Length: 444
Image (cartoon, rainbow, N blue to C red; front, side):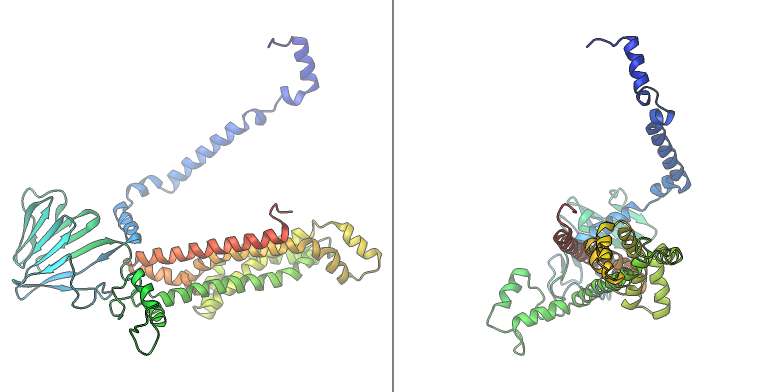
């Protein structure tokens, strides 16, 4: 392709000056915007001390929390009492009293063996032998401390008067002069179906399903299916019944709050719309009211109503109602201001009353949009209701916060998060189907 002549170039420059004579922002605007963005991110990095925060982060603790999401830890304290090693379990109790535990074996001489996969601890009141990679490392037990041997591997650390042993994913051990605190980790969720005090403890999913269809009753007073349901909901460790009740409470909060907000925002939006209500004072007051309601975050409303009504679902419903009334009112008013006036004029030309004009000339145009927006807010509020529940507004959010506060129930946290994800996924698909029926899959 040959180059154009100077005369042709001048002719094109005179005909299309916006192409050949671009302003500074047209030429360098994108590059300048990228530079400003980089400088802003650098400013935020320095202002919020991101580097030191990352450097001082307790990443090993975060790794333990993540592991606790998909695994469980048995945490007995093996106390030295009267020349014997006696296990003491936490209140959560992963095993039934007197149960045979394959990885924790007592011996006739009062000693005990704790297995960690291919490694193990041989525990007595005078010495604890730590086997790592087939090599034994004796830890001496004195009256004042537990002492690691010389030349111990990196997995054994002397920390003050105790010895810490890391077995990787299999667990950890803390050896003291009067006890050995063991954390033994396993994949999965312990006692998810039935707790150790249940008569059905030890049954897995398949045996439980088979039991439900068995003719031999475990409890003569009720069917096996009813017994399985009662024992699963009444699980003392996992509290399925309470968690599901709190989840339903969260869904009710989201639905009722969104429904009330829709019913209130619908008529007030007609007052805020300038083409529907030709009164600037009324328009201004209503729009500012919507601005006030939505400018205060839902979490702040939840804190306010929790102080006024106490913990429970009522503050959550009120918080969603106030916030969504402002947000939906603004969206509805904007939709009303963009309706086609031809239908309204047609209704007016036949002598229809103002109410009839709005009923038949405006509502059919905006109703699909109104319903679509309300469904979207309802779907969004199923997530928001979880957050406001954490500040005392009831629902599964408060249960989630309680589980996090124990610092040992991260598997239960994962369970509740999974339930929330499933509910949000289902509600998202339900609202999508309803919206597509109302306004079509393409949004028209």
